[in-house]
Image (tube, rainbow, N blue to C red; front, side, top):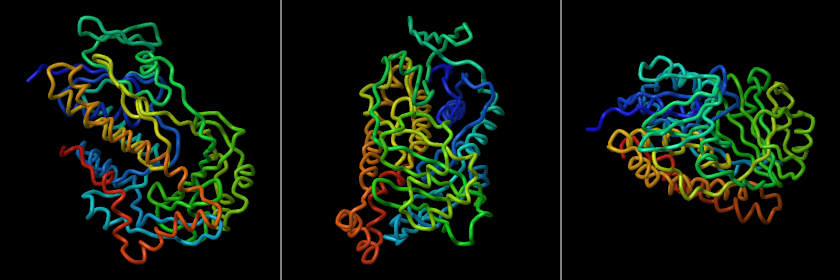
Length: 400
């Protein structure tokens, strides 16, 4: 058995904190470097399917996850303009029985909080806030990280979990070249108490429509409804989650949609309205260089149309910590980690791209061709609708 490794993680987001907890569980000492002066998270809803739940439970966070989460009863596809249901596939107990763990909806800030609390309480984890990793150099088997406060630190391994605009990735491989998808995303949080009873069912619902789609589901134990709206537009190309949006403009983008969507938007907390442009990136051919590697959005940022971005980062964290704990050399561990993760994450990236096209059918012929077989399968053999997701939700990296 090799000596315990000291690991530096750039970024204290969901992926970085999960990686810190997973490494600490494997008896590594971890330093997490975070740009923000205080731990916190922005954003709204996340979907944590069984493949992510397995990891969080293994890290001892099952009870906390249950406390913050909402268990949807079904995954539903509806037509956005008429409101008609195409299919509704059971989740809840059915998903737990099929995949061995619960499917949750959570508020991103709530998930981040329970991870941060666990990391802060772990004696093997040192959280250093208010600075960022700005550069990395490896020499003679030792990694030196340059920090934004002018200091530096050395370690046996460094993990770049610093998000879609990763400084570690840029230090390793140069600037990326994302492509604007022609889609703009809106998000809102709506207090459930502001809505008519039963207006929004306790489902993970995708509403499809012409040149756009929306997603609705409950978070924070049912206190809030998370709304995400995607519309094809070319006039907004700011990639960031912190740009405030105008609810009136949002309503214009979905003017032709059914009354349920309009009631939901009308009841929203306008201070939670944000919009951002969606950019796409091809899977990276290489994630690592020596004893430095990447995790989550830093190496496989994906469009949100599979609701698996957080789960992929959570899976990454477990696999990476496992490989680090087994290998005598961090570089070998990172190569093994890449081998285990690249094909799966790239497949999810491609599936998300495909859903972007699948959900934006406006013409009757396109809707009939795309959604007709789904409706028929739901009537004849509903289990057929589960099979396309088994490879995602059915994975359990803690048993691999």
